[in-house]
Image (tube, one colour):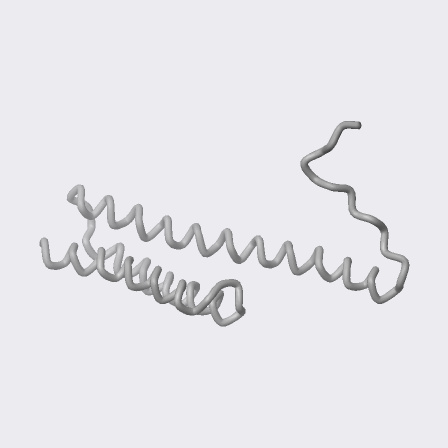
Length: 104
């Protein structure tokens, strides 16, 4: 018997269970999208910081960070991850941007 990496789910018999399964698919898609957006926003700020360190525009990372803060806070408010994780990401990005302005 070959085992697959993904176990086959049993079909639910109760109507409430079937509804729950349908809702789970939608919620999973929404959460995946939000998580992806979060990662993209952070990567954009990080890339802007790297370009600024290489002699690029010093104001771009601050602008992107302003947008990233709102995205990070919204996702934390929805309970995607803990508020301390959001604070940690914002703090680390902020410290890197502050170091850029001091070095300039």
